[in-house]
Amino acid sequence: MGWLNKIFKGSSHKISEGQYHGQSGDDGYWNEPSSSSVGPSEDVLSEFDNEEIDRAIALSLSEEEQRKAKAVEKESLLDEDEQFARALQESLNVESPPRENGNTYQPLPFIFSSGFRICAGCNREIGHGRFLSCMGAVWHPECFRCHSCNLPIYDHEFSMSGNHPYHKSCYKELYHPKCDVCKQFIPTNMSGLIEYRAHPFWLQKYCPSHEMDGTPRCCSCERMEPRDSKYVTLDDGRKLCLECLDSAVMDTSECQPLYIDIQEFYEGLNMKVEQQVPLLLVERQALNEAMEGEKTGHHHLPETRGLCLSEEQTVSTILRRPRIGAGNRIMDMITEPYRLTRRCEVTAILILYGLPRLLTGSILAHEMMHAWLRLKGYRGLSQEVEEGICQVLAHMWLDSELMSGSGSNTASASSSSSSSSSSSGPTSSKKGMRSQFERKLGDFFKHQIESDTSSAYGDGFRAGNVSVLRYGLRRTLDHIKMTGSFPL
Image 1 (cartoon, rainbow, N blue to C red):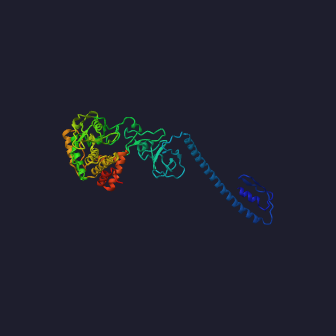
Image 2: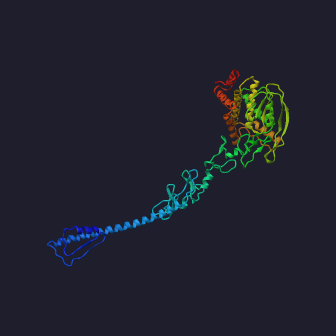
Image 3: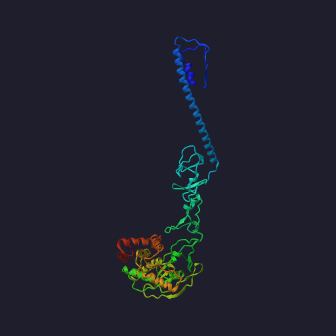
């Protein structure tokens, strides 16, 4: 009505004996005159005034309705803002929890909906109810669920993997690494980071503390002994896991078929060993004593598992495979002395007992190469050249075993020998019918040869292997005999 007031005040017509009282507010009123005096154009003026007044009143009423509507809308928005601010203030008053590894999140507080929202969980409208805002979307509280257990997440914080939410406990169970030895969650270090050790080949993960707490390793595959699976203890204190025990060669007679296989392997390379060299399986103590009595030769430290002898000695060999007694300990082992006499450059080959067939065979192939070199007159070779070419032959034999798909009489004879000596002893795996673990074990023994860090066995193998791959085995051996070194 202020606009109407302005019209009346701006009129050029005179109005006598009547007054208009205008106010600065929204109200205004008109006092009718008791008498009036008008000029000659009274009818025209009256018609014009009435039309202008009607239009002004209509516009004023429209402005009034718009003003009241805006006031109601403003009041509603203020109420909602006040509710949101109160909820936000309450959430800020709650102590914020610590973050774990940067993947813990805290959802926004529950607030009241005032518009059209779609739940990201069920794809239905949320309506005027409580909802959760997180991960760039809104959810019914019961629709925000753990990706693992599918139960609603009502916790104060949750974890994320990819685009999926998890309860903190579910996330830890799925993604926090467990120790393969003690089966517990691997603890964090002083910096709050998860620190563990892992075997480079088997990828067995374990707590760093197990390297210092006396946890034993298998003497064959080098895996640590889990708390829930006891290894077999050999009489010399070595530990053997049950998988390696399954194909372990335990006495001298059991090893003879394997010896024949390796002799045939050498004949296939046109490198037949003419002399009959005795093969004996011995304990660790007997092997160490024989090594001390040997004046020549090289030994793989820290532990020697095979030896090619040139001196006359008396060696204690294992006559009958032992049985496994209480506490997974070896019992009833029978040994006998064996007198070695010198008939040629080689008196015997000794192999440590209790190792899997593939490892026993690779050691035997290595020692057989020592015998072949001595019998063929390869003298004065450096340790790197002699041990290197012997490791090449061990690696070649493992390759031939793993690639072979045909059967063999070795395992049958070995199994027969095992059955006759001990009904409880493990049977050797058949060639071409190995378990998946035994094939993996063969790959591990190859990996050991390839990754050996010693100068003689490691660097020597790598240099010899390059020469054999480039020039062939025969040309490499001829060059070694003439020059005492590998061909470049």
